Length: 450
Image (tube, rainbow, N blue to C red; front, top):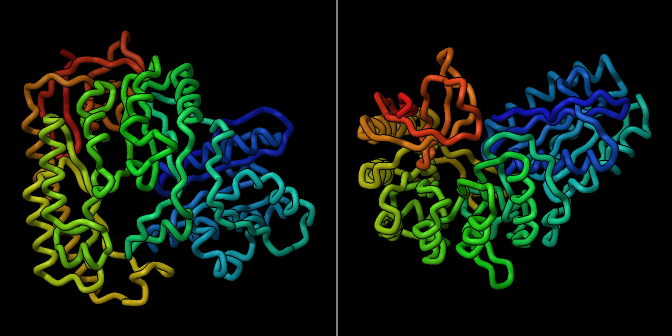
C-alpha cells in the first residue's frame, strides 16, 4: 500500500484529501484526480481530519489489498459519524470490481467511481453534497470508456525527482488470474504529443527521471508511433536525464523496444519483466502467451543488447493446479535468470477472472511455504548480485535523506538499485553524483562519494 496526500491550501474552498493504494498507475491516477478537482475549485487538505472530502484510490489485484481498504473505510466512518457533512469516496479498481458489495460493506460511502469516471467526480461529489447530512444512496459511476485517456488533463504532479506518466490505460491480455481488464477496460494509448507536453512540464518543474506507465506499456501504439519510437521521442526532451517504464509484457518486447533500450543513453538499464511462473503447464493455464523457454531466450536477447541491465520480475505461487514440479520449475527459472529483485505473491482468487471458476487447489499453508522458499532464493541472489558491485563506481540520482542513518542521502543507480552515502552540503535532490560501493546487502548499496 502507498498513501499520499496532496499539499495543503489555506483557502476557504472545499478541501479534499486523497489516499492512494496500490501501484504506480494509481499514484498517477491520484495526481490526475487532483488536477480534475483543482479545476473544479477544490483545495487540498494536509490530513484527513482537515478535509471536507476524503477519497481512497484503490487496488483490486489481490484480496488482501481490498481488505486493507475496507479496514481503512471503517476507520474513516468514525470521522463521518462525528462530521455528517464529510463526504467519503472510493475510486479506482476496487470501485469497479466490488461495486455491488460496497453498498453493504461500506454503507457510509457517498461516491463510488471507477478509473474512467474521474472527470465526472466534481458532479458526483456535488450530487452527494446536495443531500446534506441525511443518509442517501451513494453516487456510483463505474462505466468503462474505450475512448477515455484523459489526454487533455495535465496531472497535478506532487513534485520530486521522479515522476510517473501514463502512456497507456487498460489491458487486452486477459491473463486468467488477472482482474485488470475487467476493472480498467481495454487498451488505449495516450497521444504522444500529450505525453511529451506533460514531460516537458515535468522537466521544467525539476523532475529528472520519468517512468512511463501502462498495464502492458510496451504494447503502446498511437498511429505510427510504437513504444520504441515513443522512448526515442521522450529521450529528446531537454532536462530529463533518465527514462524507465513499467510494466511490459514479455510477448510485446519487440525489437523496436530493445533497440531503443540499447541505443538511447537516457533509457536506463533496468527492466521489470513479469514471468509469473517457470512451468510451461502453469503458464498455459495462466494464458500468459509464452513458454519458459521463450521467456529465457528473450532474456538472453535483452542482455545481449544491454549487458549492464538489471532485471526484476513478478512471481505467483499456488496458482490453480500448481504441483510441486511446477513450483520447482519456477525456482529453476529464477536460478537461471538470476533476477536483481522479484515481487512474489501467493495466488489470490479474484472474482470475474477467467480462473475464478476453477477455484483454489493449493492450501494457504502450502502457498506460504512456497512463497517463503521463493523469497529466500531471491534474497540470496539479490545479495550476491549486489555484492558483486563492491569496489565499483555508480552514478546515483539523489532523491533525498535516507530512511535510515542520520546524515545519509539516498538515490537510485541506473539499474534502480538503492544507494546510500554520506550527505554533503553541496549535494541536493536531483543531482547525480559518483559514488563507490563499499558494501552491499540484498536491498541496498552502501557507498562513499567517489
